[in-house]
Length: 307
Image 1 (tube, rainbow, N blue to C red):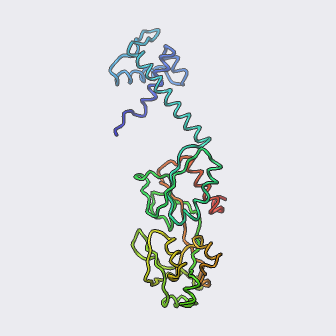
Image 2 (cartoon, helix red, strand yellow):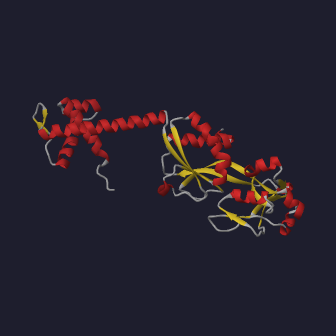
Image 3 (cartoon, rainbow, N blue to C red):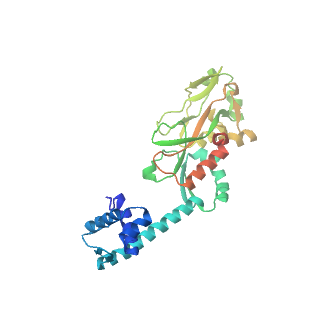
């Protein structure tokens, strides 16, 4: 779409209306702190662009032509509509309303973000939320999302990423599996175990498992005959039903650990985590309604980040 108006054209329109109301370039100039000559040149630019004369000029006064009266009526309408839109948007910034479109990684959305959203709506009843649970990367321009929550570090310089939390990683298995295969005591023991694999959709590769050994971060490639992708919860279900060991975020298995359906193993080598961040385009002015949601999620998931 090509531009119909240059930046100065709306200003010329406003000066034309002021001059018409005052029947004087001098009076219009005094109202806006300009010289009469500057106002006269502004009106002349409009006349040249339209190819019509808007004022009949004498040494003492200016008087609207028929074309000028027609143009004045339309200018009043345009400026009034523009002013009303700006007032409405300003009110929205004071009391935000409208829709925030949010894309959230599936498992994190179900366990961490969705439970918080009803509380956000209670605080801001005029803000509506459209939430997509998906593990695919968002194209902000094409998909028209305001915000996206994703795991792992953000390397795209065109996006702003604000950390929500570092989610602790744990290795779990069902009591039935451990009774059958034995409990691993060292990282070397993993080579003799069935390790449920999660395939990262973006790369198609199985995710390495992360541990801490004597203060060092260690990444291990494990083996397993069952792989799952897209849904982190899939590995949890497999582990619950005896499919093998599985490394995942603690928040995904908190309930199962409490009920005993899953047991945490290799705790001496724990301590690693996976970052989750909320991201949005660097160049886009974030509406206040979206900023409120960003701050709300950070407050509840990573409160220290706002101090």
